[in-house]
Image (tube, rainbow, N blue to C red):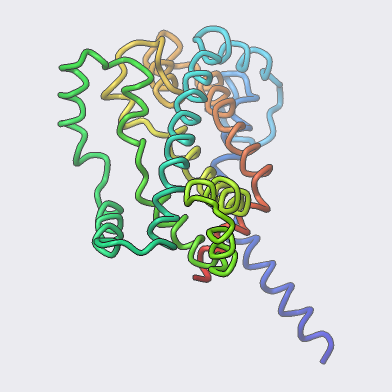
Length: 276
């Protein structure tokens, strides 16, 4: 009978490993292609492990034949700018919706839920016309503006704050702390799991976003990593698939590092918000 739990656990791990295969296969093939010389990429038979390594040539071209580092710096500025504004707004809005009583609170929360259903494609044309009228296209501000307010972040933080002990908040108010001080000195330190969980979602979404940069950006100077890859593909290097996949690997690595670093807080934040 002692073998039954072990067999069950082995079966569970086996199923998870099988499910991982279709998820990881494209990434493994991408890394393999980035290491191969051109004649091996489409040569027969197809091999996962390169017979000859061309990593230096492929990664060198991906880094220096196009301004890849500039694309990544642009992406970093945009995702961090969006994240800081989103977290700041959602921190106060989520606290107000979870812990304060005021007229129209349920209506505001209903509007937040409604906003979750509106994709970026809906306000894209009015935003483009406003930015064009103000001559703000092709700027960092144009890339950040549509994503300053995240309904998902407000919803996530509200769910997280609903579990915060009401007695602690009452004691802080009796000690003379304002609501602003309560958010910054009590709520913020305890909200790190929720912030880490949302940060992963936000950074991955906006680092990989191609739709809005294609509309708002027209030059290489402000191109984000996915838009840079499109420009890279359309350049004279379009047939160099080894260098193209090397570029794809380069812009993917920061996201993997981010997830590994934030994994524990990410899982904790999702678990705590999901239990409310």
